[in-house]
Length: 487
Image (cartoon, rainbow, N blue to C red; front, side, top):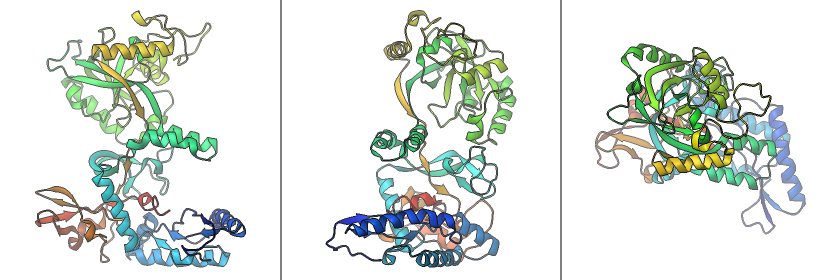
């Protein structure tokens, strides 16, 4: 089934997500690719010239894990699986233009994946930083948040995912958070799917403001150091009875008193063993999941000092990594306050007969001085205005969406086209030197490090800027990078 670019008929384009060549075809393949096949045949019968390409998303863990077991290079494994899938699809009679096959592990495809990465780098949309990551001990690699199941395990191996700090490459997808959210409106998708996407992007409006740090007695620090917090409910600020930092917050060592240091360090070490999903999905019973830092912070709304805690339900990747805690209006804060015997002050009047715990609904503002009597929206606006006028903070928008972590400590993936020079740091490989290809003579060891790290022939290179000795980046790209542009 073939069509040419200059075919005079009205043009149409149908592309089904390309298969992973990790095993033989099964009924899932038959089901998925039958839908596309039907659409191609229908449009062809309508007199359209339908472009129906096929390809294989051929990098990834299955081939590398097979290589670790057998000691063989993953390419023969992958090529054999592609032959199997090709035969199966052809025997099914699937209508594809087999002249237009692409494979993400082909050098010609790698070239353009790396070219795209370099354009992102030029635009400031690719960057490298030290970051806590999801680490699968079974797969011995970093996982994206999407690859960690709700129970904190790896979607492929089933192992419990750990947290580690590693230097990683990211795509700055958060630059497009609002555009992604807005463009959902124009997609002809089921509403439940669009709702899932909106929740994943997670837009929240609120305020960021500073809490001046103080010692355990409430005396402000001489250096004026402050902790910035984010909240969607600045109208409830008079009900703040404590504040919370994420255990990964960079200010933790600075705010921890000598008396509390051992306890804080033990708590931080324990939290590092839990995945983010485990931390945020816990329901109630937050006893033994926080620790007092020995410091306090000053609430700018009323000048009161409140204790500063670390707690595992606050994540560094959302907002500022620190929150004001208002237990009367947030259930997690309520649970924590009950566990640690902290005060609870209501700032929103619950309806008559309310017998619950934290009240998160609307109602008149109470116990809040100059906000008393206002409704929720008006109180939020007035609180933000006050923060901005007084110079304590400002209104802001936050998103749940995180930047795309694309580094993988694996061999069977697209190499990241970066070299490291002692003089010039991270330097992009010039376009005329693409593609950067991995060598064939590598040793596969389940060490958690890419085999490329031990291959001197690959590792040693020269700096494109000064010509001096340099080393190549040994991480490879997430396979979702390959499958993000083949359409």
